[in-house]
Length: 316
Image 1 (tube, helix red, strand yellow):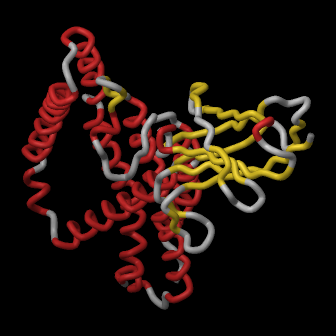
Image 2: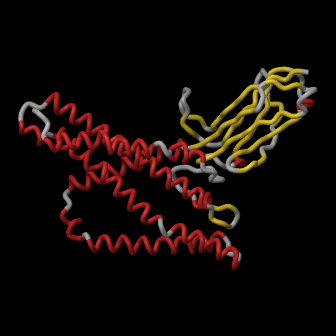
Image 3: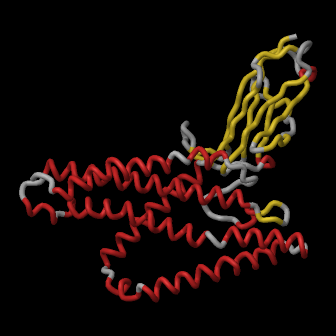
């Protein structure tokens, strides 16, 4: 079977615009991993993570919003690739014009439409997110003016955000009541699959968009010329709380010799230093550990801490 003009147009549109736009959104992943949120975040929201003292911090909200955008890019890319694969299989297996009604053809149509539907879902999410930022300004004003605590400010924020969202949902249901009644079981199933795909991509992004990096300006230090060793630490994204990070100085046998404190430099950059006079000449490992379970590239592919390390040599 030769593809119809509509199928050709869809393939060209998916190959060019849709796939390119999704890859562009997915490229925001490193930016999410570098946001200085000041907290240890997971895909499930913990309201306490949004506070710095009595103030609500906008950085964690920006992290989650950016994670949703990246998840949108991944979801659209997955559906675009599935659409292209489905059309390729149709070209291989189709034998007549009736093949446009096969499950494979319906799957190709569903993936094409789904790429636009998940974009609409995310657009609704950002529309509902609009009241959050005025609510943050209100909460900061109330803290400055009345010195309110977290409980009161959380209640104010919840009311300020929830009421517009509830009104918006009610208006949408009232305006589209006839459309919602016309939906069939297959339509609800497709909506459920799209939402699950988008959510799974969001979980993957929010769990892996983090920065835990350790470096040192030199690999060779002299006790006579260098009184201190300085280690540079970078934290960001879902791992931005210095209180959850520990720096260890280990000897060549892996024994922990020191745990120098980590000091903030700003914009997700930290440093730690220790005296070279406190150590004898030899090889040492600087090991950074962050208390957060995460996926890793080494067996068993799941660790309870994020670890990065570097090695230095100390000479007389």
